[in-house]
Length: 143
Image 1 (cartoon, rainbow, N blue to C red):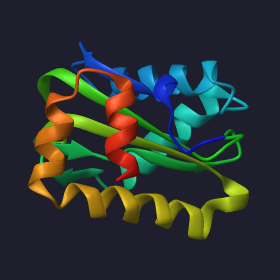
Image 2: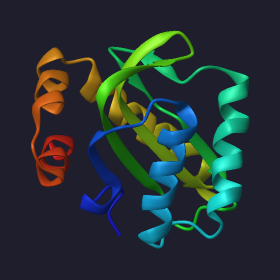
Image 3: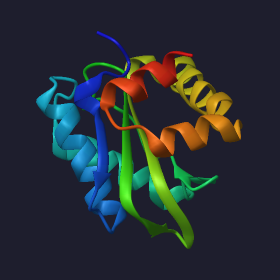
Image 4: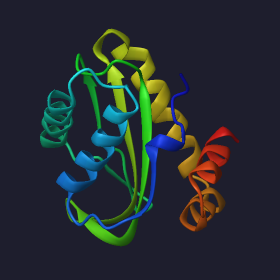
């Protein structure tokens, strides 16, 4: 199973809170068979959010959790219809990460590093902001 696929991409979502975004992506991950326990995963994401904001600049947030509730390491992407406040920062794109506790150390860091390597490029962010289909997101992430 790939880290990200079309089932884990939501474009132009009408979310206005962190809770809505995290729940939306958790639902997508759960439907795709990537979670063992959706509610426990969501709880773990918010425990992580309490430690330190996952807004990373560039209008992007990366909520994530290492959790026993995760069956398969996954990366979800949500582009919002309108920017929202994420701990005081304006965010319009969210990469949500789910990693099984058994793979927590290295895998979690690999995913964060990969996302960050893409996001430092303004061209990548601009293209991501204008994609029309989930398939385009997947192709961009593969570059």
